[in-house]
Image (cartoon, rainbow, N blue to C red):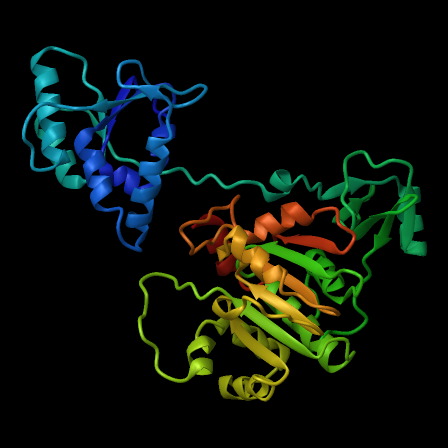
Length: 431
C-alpha cells in the first residue's frame, strides 16, 4: 500500500490487522502516537488474532534501530519512524491523534495522512478536514518454488524426449540449473508434450520417467501429473520422508492416505497407518468436548474421513465411517501432537496432516519419533495457516522441506492444480 505519502500517522487497529504495516508506506515518514503503543500493550494478552498481532507489532517496533531525535530506520527504500508524544491528558489514542492534528493545522503545518480503519475516527477526521485513508493489506504470496530453489520445468530436445519415453530414463551431460536428489519436475519438448520425471544423481545426472499407475490405488487414480508424482513418492520404499505442499483441494490427503492404506493392507510393507495433527482450531475455541479420548480427537480428523469416502467408495457417510472405524485403533491410528514426546513409531506409515501449523521445534519432535522401517509424509498448505505464530516462510512444513532438500531419503512434491471443485480452487487462489 504505497500511495506516495510524505508522512502518515498509523492507528492501533492497523497494527492489529497487520503487525508490519509500517513497511507499507514506502519512503514516507511514519508517526506512531504514544497512545497507540499503550493500546497495543493493553491488547497483547489473549489468544485471538488481534492479541497475537498486537504482541507481534510491539516486538517489531521494539526491534527497530535508531533514537527519538533522528528517528528509527525502517530499512532500505523506506522512511523513518518517529514516536508521537503529544502533551495532554487523553482518554485514548483517538483523542490524542485528533488533538495533535488540530494543533498542527492551527500552526499551519502540512498534515500527515491518518491511516485508520476505525470508521468513527475517520468521520472525526473528515469533520475537521484532516487527510485520512483506510488500510487494506495487499495479498502478497511467496512463490514456494522460488523460495525453495526448485525449478519445475526442463526443456529437452525431441531426441532425448523420445529416448525417455522408450527407455524410461535418460542421462544428462549437465543440468542447466541446480537440481536436488529425488526432485520431481516436468520435461517438455517442441510439441509441448509434458512428462513428469524424477532426478537422481550418482555418477551421472539421470532423469526417470514417472509412469502412470496401471490400476487405481485403493480406488484412487491420480488426476494430473502432480498427483502422479505424489503417488510415486508415497510408493517409493527408498524414500523415508517426504513433504507435500499444496493448496486446499489439490489431493494431498486423498492420494497420500490411499497410498498408505494400500501399502499396509495389500503390500504388507507397514503394520499400521498413523495420522497426526496439531489440535489447532479455526476461529474461536470450542472448549470442552464430550466423549472419551478417541471421540474428542476424531473431531480434528474430518479431512481423513472425507478422504476415506473416496477411498472406500461408499455412497453414505455411515458406510464410510464404518469402513474406517473397522481399522481405527487397530491399523489406522489417530494421534495428536500432545502425546508424541518419547514415542518410537516403527513399522508405520506416518501422515502428519496440516503440518503448516507446526512450529519448527514441533516438526523436529515429530520427525525424530520415526523409527525403523517407517515412512513419514508431512502434508500442508502454507497459504492457510491457523497457528498465528507461523507464516508462509516460517512453519514446520517448509522448515523440514528446506533442511532435507537434496538428501537421498527425502523428496517433496508441490501441488498447484486443484481437483476438488472449480469453486474450491477459485477460493483457494483468490480469497
